[in-house]
Length: 332
Length: 226
Image (cartoon, rainbow over the protein chains, first blue to last red):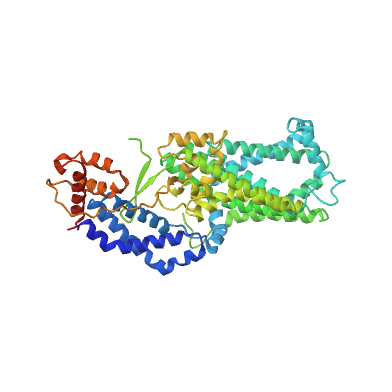
């Protein structure tokens, strides 16, 4: 078939296709709605298949470059529409938190265990160390920082608000989201540098948190401090451990890809990491909410806070341990 | 040959052609995004400043959204384009040419943190200079590419002249070249057209405007016009 005949036969089809694409990409809602009058969305896959076939024919028959370019352009734009990812469905979000995320944490248990060790060993170690050598705190923090921590948990000043010197609940919530979630994200990302970044962040945070906790306990400010952190400690610390683990597994993919190419291993660990970070994000926002609106309540008796904190320390590991077990859709 | 073109076979049996973008246009897109975000945060700051301490909290949440969520939401929901990328006609796609997915976009934007190290996107710049497709580290791990959005091609038409048979049998690639010359002649000056037509004396057996005219006629014949 000569090109002119081919073009004349299909030109109307191509024009419709082009107008439909343009209408879909339009900015105004009204113009986008008009796409349906040009071509029904259900007819689009067939139209794209036909177009792809016509493109293949045009290339095979050495039709002019202009025609091939136009068809290729239409096909590429159609391809973008056909393979557009769908919106996340509620069902999938629920499934993710009920099953996918706990399963993924368990599947990556080696990275998680390493991350927990890297975080909790320095934390507990520094607390124990400060019990015997309290003066060592001065090699961790400067006098101004110490004064600030002490001011936040001074038993004589915590009649109204715990764990902060000023600021409303909402202000602190915003601060915790911006700061803590950002730290969680960076902990994961820094794992790409052969895991070194994640190791550094985990150990450093362990030492700092352990230092603050140990010091405040030693100088007798322990009660307001532990009552303040009890509630949000479980989601916050476990989230940091998980994001560290997500970072370590990406670092391991770079160091020891196993029987995959390094690029392939990185892409696979990237998907795992992104899913883990989604869970970390939820945990940290929850922790920020607890920290801002619950932990700071000063009039609440300490035993209630400790009970709630301990139940979270039970509930979250239980969720990670049992979540998604024994379900019909259990995947590898 | 150094070429930024990636050809991807699709299940539909066609070859997608992706032209990956280098560090420079991407840096410009990022700078533009940065200005837009900074401007938006300034406006938000002024509006929330009236709310006092609670406003600070909301401002920080907005700052979190603008720094972490903005690129992911725009890339997935706006056809792989943040506002800066749209202005520079760039688009993020998966390595197989399909639109970028949620997880891939999350990975590439989280790992931006590493690309920014040690200063000014140092790692990202080195990676994109070393990689054949100009990918930064985040793109390598996410399996994504930043490509140019091609301008919709505007097809020219072959001048409407009587068809004329070529004195020689030509292979199809050469026929296509002559048709393309005719299609594009509207974009060329008459002098340039004549100059090009002169390269084919065996075919046109003429000089100047007549040679051009004959080539147009042959193109019309190749297209199947009577």
